[in-house]
Length: 272
Image (tube, rainbow, N blue to C red; front, top):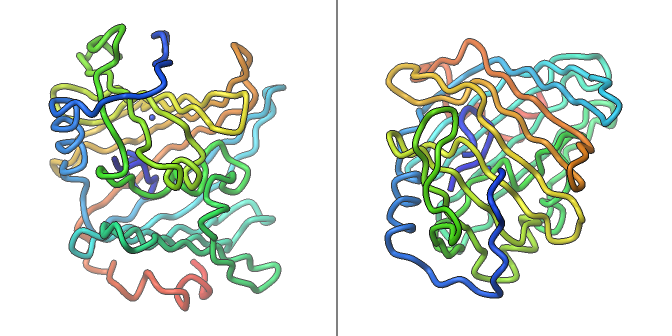
């Protein structure tokens, strides 16, 4: 289940939540999630990003970024640089997202003020990415075999923004997956016409908050369904604690300038 924010997310309300102690894997629900995972999401991409951080008082902080993405077989590499404001400029984030279950995903954060590259350890991936409502684990794909899937027991289908969606409960199969992602379960809303997750509810394992992921704008670019505005909101009960808005502009695929040399620690430390 792809939820990384290189270009697509990956690809996260009013429904009652699944509360049962266990959940059997439903082959029909899994087949839908397999199509989500197999959906064309573009290659050798580049885009301009805008990140808006909004606190509970409504105060905004705005950051601009440039993002690159590339597939190598079933693996996905992504690189993003913060361009502004000055206090985060040249900060870089590199991800090697491996499809092989036996191979851990790699993530590195370059901090120019310290001239230091930090590898994100597995135990830190549930932490906040650069003060946003996205965690480091949100910026990688979820392996299908790490989860059980079942239609929501109260309402297996509904509509979001006038489009029919399946409502699917997603439950980690093991403690390791739950611990690394930081989530005990997720509810995914999958559009029936294109298999894009356009809404999700995340339930953190060690917090009394809930995270709401919402694709506000979805565009067809070069034949690829592309998220161009995404909101992630952290709530405590009905109160919004914090919110992150991501917008994507100048999205381009199949760029010859994007190659494997982009996705190295050396390139990360070189800066934008």
